[in-house]
Length: 406
Image (cartoon, rainbow, N blue to C red; front, side, top):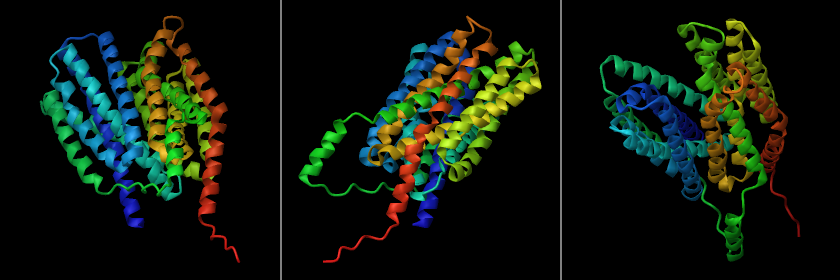
């Protein structure tokens, strides 16, 4: 069992890296595809909404299928479909074909995203210690791999369809090979007729309110992440007057700090608990983005973006872990709700900050992120119940059965 559990963990790492590399491959080819199709930045922004909409729908479908069939069944299918549809945006000759391609690719990638997180929840529960943040770090590693491969294919003179098809083909093979190591979900216990009626009633029952609290927190945290993705470099260039070559390092600093933080967050969570990771991480992120908002110095802005990324790094993985613990029998559906709302937050982040720049300077618009991080820190207590219940269940599962003497 120990060996199979380690193999399942490695396989889950591979799927997270695969998801990051597929999204990253699309991102690095955006400029060329945009120019070839002949659309403006504004039109591209509208098309990205379709990508997010497809992902949101895919998350809801895959979450329910993961609960019914098992994440180990849905995850390879999501990996293969997401890899196979990566080439569609590269092949699209016009606006409408590109819109349809992004909707389909988004749907398939949403299936991959939720199923890999649902499987990660199962692996983490079996490990009986925090490992979720390391999985999310591998998503970032996948993005780095995609940027390197994209640069290599571009320098080799490959067109976007050829380069994206090559990455997609490698992704299909990776998804199929890794499927053998996934951890099967334990079959549900046999139920009586009365139990079956209760189970059917439970399926019609609305998800617990705690799930929606976690979903709103995920949306706030991921909105902050999305804003950093699109506005960090522009902040240094437009507000602080840094050269474009220097400004480009703003996002790199943020991303490197986030990856580092995710590699460390599991140890911190294991020692101090998930609530501490969310609370103090959100506080650190709030301090970091406030520094970015008020500083006139480039070096301080770099420090602020690094602190912002480091603080945010462990927040979303803790929310996903807590979501999976609320109701293990509906982990897939619950993760799809939290991930779906979080994904919408990430997509809306750049737009919200862009809208605020019509009212205030860009650096002052970042104070909204300070507020969101402060709210997340204040609400971190929502994780206390889940972690406490988990520890109690873990203790009770190791107690010897109670004997009843006649």
